[in-house]
Length: 295
Image (cartoon, rainbow, N blue to C red; front, side):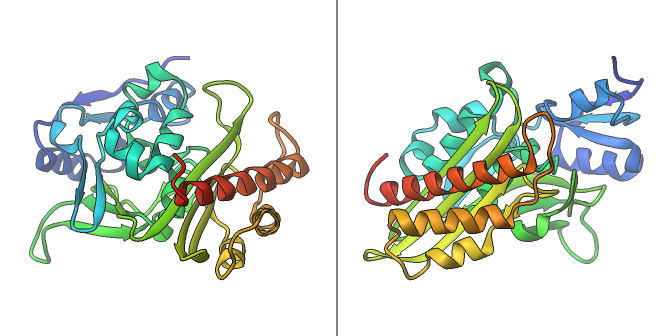
C-alpha cells in the first residue's frame, strides 16, 4: 500500500517546527528518520495530513557529556551511537542496542529520538533508557509561564502502546543518561527471528556496585507488554548481593513473572516468558562482567 495524501513542511528551526505543530494540531506528525512512522503510513495505520520534517535541524545531532549526564540529541542517528568512541568506552549498552536495530541501511537514517518518541514497546531504546534511569527533554511553545522546555523522567514518559507524555505541540529534543559513577556496568540482550525483525523479547540490565556488592540495579524489558516494563522485583532482588549465577537466574525468573507477553507468530506467552528469563540472566551477568572491566 501507499500512504494517504499529506502536506509536507520543512522548518528551518526548532521554534518554527514547534509553531507548525501548534498551528496544524493533531493532524501533524514529526518526520525524523521515518522508519517507525512511514511503515505505519503505508499500512494506513497512521494517516497524518501534515508531515513536519525536522531532518534539517542538524543542531539536534550530538553525543556529549555535560553536567553529569550523557546528552544525546534527538536527531542523532543510530549509526552514530554504533560508531561513537565515547559510547563504546563508557556506555556500551547503547552500542549493544543500536547494533541490533534493523540493519545498517536503516541505522544510517533512523534516529535515537524517533525510536523513543514513537512509543512502540517493540522498539529497543525504550527498555535500555528505563534501565539507565534516563530523562527525556522536550520543547514546546514558550510563553508567559516559561521557556516551553521540560524534562520528563523515563518512568513517566511511556503511557501506553504508541502513546507517550509528549503533547501535540512538543518535540523530543534530547535524551539524558546519568554519567556512571564508581563501579558500574550495563548490557542489552535481544532475541529476534531474523535480522531487522522486532524482538521476540529483549532485556536491559544496568548495575552499580559498592565493592563486590550490588548497590543499585535497573532491569527493563522489550516487547513483552504495552510499554517497556521495569522489572522492579528483579531489580530489588539483586541489590545487596554479589550477583552470582544463582542471583542472576533468580532475577531472570522475577523478570519473566513481571512480563505480559501476547502470543503471536513469534511465539507463545510461555515461550516469551522463558526467553525473558534467559535474556535477563545473560544481560545481568554481562553487566557484571563489564563492571569488572570487560568490554
